[in-house]
Length: 204
Ligand code: GRF
Image 1 (cartoon, rainbow, N blue to C red):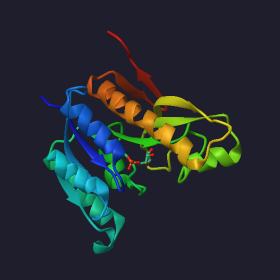
Image 2: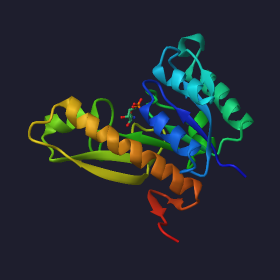
Image 3: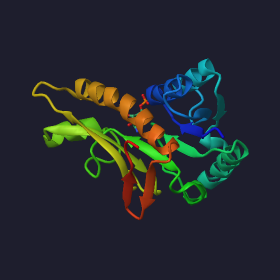
Image 4: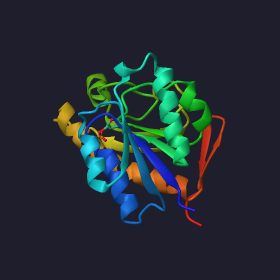
């Protein structure tokens, strides 16, 4: 049976693209079935259309509460039999309406080595702090801000002459490898979650 993925995104969607390409090219044993997007004008919506991937695009202002639109998202996920939700630049915290039914099947990518530099502008935070190693984290989502159990991380060296733009560009290149790779490990059943610890079985 096909392993079915939904991606949540709010912006450009370069990570959406990386996952959709990997699935299309057979590098991930899965198919991307749905994009969920809270910004009707976001570039990621056009990317999804160009892949022929279904979209659920909404404007949060049209709903009385977060829970109300999340109920609708939950219905979309359940109708499509989604196995894994990938948050890739989805700029909203989610509530128990989504976290509870999908806990352990809901991941997020963050452009820093968590628990350092959660939240917005992680590359800028890393530069301002003066760290020598920045990086990327993929983690399970627990409803907090970038707080869930960590599945995979990769380091990116900070250069003396880095600006936020140059550092973030190198971080994004790593994101585009690490996210599809982590999704593949999950789709292959190699990832198990035990409380805060995530076990990843590599090789055979
Ligand atoms: C990525 O840097 C991701 O780590 C963060 O939001 C950004 C989304 O970028 N959560 P894109 O829209 O995939 O290009």
